Image 1 (cartoon, rainbow, N blue to C red):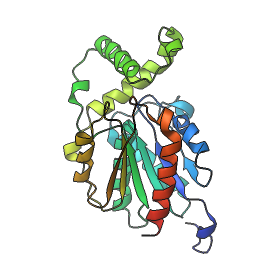
Image 2: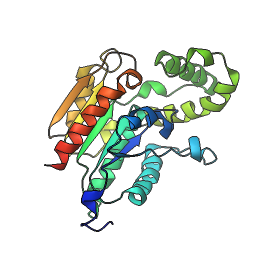
Image 3: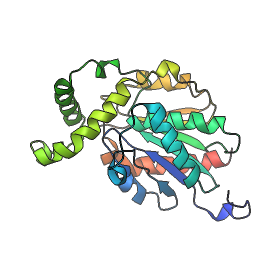
Image 4: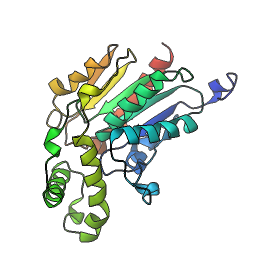
Length: 244
C-alpha cells in the first residue's frame, strides 16, 4: 500500500472492464477525456496483450484473475470501477471480492453500462456452427463491427473466437447466484433501444444506496458518440464519492 501522506498527490484510478470481444483499448477514447485520472484497462485472458493465454471457462475464473491484477495495480488512493456491457458483470464480480477483502477500501463509486442484470440463457444451446453465425449477427447488430470489416475473413478469423468465448461466459452466468449487496453509489449508463430502463433498474437489487440512471441515444456502443458526456459524469461522481 502507498503511505497515507502520499495519497492526496495521486490521481484517482478508474478500473475499466471491457465488452465481449474487446480489449482494454476499448476505453482509449474516453481516457483522453479524463486526464485527471489514471485509467487501468486490463485485458481478459486470451484477448489483446494476453492473446496467447487460454480463455477463461467461466466468470469465476475471469473475476479471480482480474481481482488478482486489481490488487497489484491498485495504488492505494481513491478509485472507482467501470464496466461496459460484459464488463458490467466483471465489475460486479470484482466488487464482490473487494467487499470481502478487509485489507481493501471500497471504491468511491461504481459505473455500469449497457448490460442489465439478467441471465442470458438465450446464448446457450447452440452447436458451434450455429453459435458462430449467431455471434456474428449479434455483434454486427450491436454496432461493434465497422462496415468495412463485415466481409473481412481475416478479421473474423481473429475476433470470432474472442466473441464466442465471451458470449459463452455471459450465457452461463447466473445473476441469481450473485451475492452482492452494497450502498456504494452506482451510476448506470444505458440506451433505451438497447437495454431499457426498466431492465437496468434491476441493478438496485444489488446496489441499495444512491443509484443514478443516465440515458444516451444510440446503439449498444453509445459510448462511441457520448464518451465526452460520460467522462464528465464519471469525473463529477468520483469527486462526490471521495467526499462521502
